[in-house]
Amino acid sequence: MDIREETKQMKLASPLLAAMPLEKRNEALSLIRSSLDEHREEIFEANRKDLALAVQNQVAPAVMKRLTFDEAKLSDVTQELTSLISLPDPIGKVTLHRELDEGLTLTRVTCPIGVIGVIFEARPDALVQISSLCLKSGNCAILKGGKETTYTNRILFTLIHEAAMKAGLPEKCLLQAEQHNEIDELLECHGSVDLLIPRGSNAFVQYIMNHTSIPVLGHADGVCHMYVDRDYDMEKAIPLIIDGKTQYTAACNAVETVLVHRSIAGSFLPKLANALHQAGVTIRGTEEVNRIIPVDVIPEGESWHREYLDLILSIKLVDGVDEAISHINTYGSHHTDCIITENEETARRFMTLVDSAGVYRNASTRFADGFRYGFGAEVGISTSKIHARGPVGLEGLVSYKYKLLGHGQIVGDYASGKKQFHFRDL
Image (cartoon, rainbow, N blue to C red; front, side, top):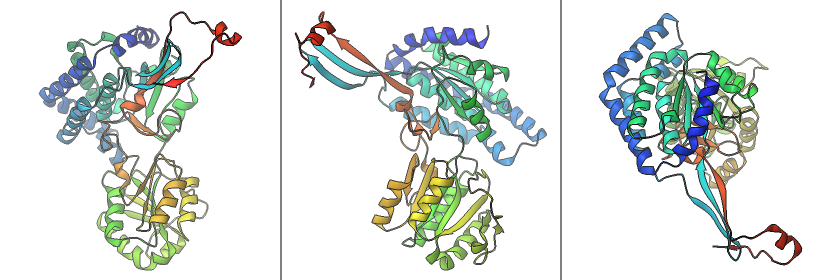
C-alpha cells in the first residue's frame, strides 16, 4: 500500500483516536516509556550502526551530535514522557459557552487537528517526542525521519507503535515512512493530511513549504541574538552568552550573533573574548570589533542572517537598544532573542518591539524549548504567527469546533424579526 492510501486510512482512523479517553492515551505513553527502557540496549546498538555509517560518510560534528541516541537522550525522552503524562487533557476544553437565544446554546470545544505529517532530519529523539505529543493530543502521526538514523528510527517506531496497540489505540494512529520518494508523495496528500511539520535545515524546510498545498508549521532557521545593553551586569552577561552559544551548538535556539552597546565595548569585549576562547569559540566581527579584540573580520556586504550551528559567534557594536531591535528584526529569524540589561524601561522597549516568537531578558536563549516551558515536549518551534508560535506542545496540536445545541430553531425566524438573538455568555 502506498503512502496516499495509508494516509486515507489514517484520516478515517483519526476521529476514533480523538474519541479515545485520556486514560487510554496516557496508558500508551506509559507503555512507551517502559518499552524504551526495557529495550535500551537494542536501541543503542541500532544507534551505533547509524553513527558508524555517519563517520564513513564524514558527517559534520554538529550533525553527529544530533544523530546520537545514548543514555542521556534516553533519560531526556523518559523525563519528557513522564511530564507529558502528568499534563491535563488538551481535548474537550470549552473555550466559549454562549446562549444565542433561549434554548439555543453555542460552545467552542478543543479537538485534535487530525492527521499530522512530521518530516525531520537527523534527531531520533524527535521521533519519540513527536509521536508521544501526537498521541496525547489525539492526533494520528506520519513520521518521516532522515536516512542518517534509519536503524534507530526503525526500532524506536516499532516499540512506540507496539505500545500504542497494546494500550488499545487504533492501528492506524501511527505510520512510519522510510523511503525518500515518500516525502514527495506525502506532500501531495492534501485531502488526508491536515498539517505538515518539517524539522531540519533551512533548505529542507523551504523545500517542504514550496512544494505542498498542505498547511505547514515550523521555522526555516534559528538566527538568535543577545544584545548586551550599557546597563548590563557583567556577572550575568558572560555566563548567559557562553551558555547560549556552547550548551548545545547544533540547536536552533543557540546564539549566533551578539550585539554590544558601543559605550561598554572597550571594557566588556576583552573579558567576553577570553571566556569565548576558553570555551573553544571562534569569534567573527566587524572591523570596529577587531580594533578592540582580534576576530575573523566579517567582509563588508556579507549577510548577518547567518546560522552557524557551530562554535562560531558573530559580534557587532550598536549605538543602543533601537539599533539592536532594528538589526534583530532585519537579520534575525524571529525565533528567540534576548536583552541583557538591568534597565526596566530598556528591557520593556526591547521585549515589546522585537518581533520574535521568544523575547527574553537576562536568560539564555536555550530555554526556548517545549520541555523547559512545561509543555512535556515539543513537535518543533514555530516562527509563524498563525495558529501556534514558539515551542509547539499540546496546545499547538489542537484546533477547535463549534457545537450548537438547539430545539428546532430556524434562521428564517431571526431574519424576519420574529425572534431576536440576545447573546449571553454562560
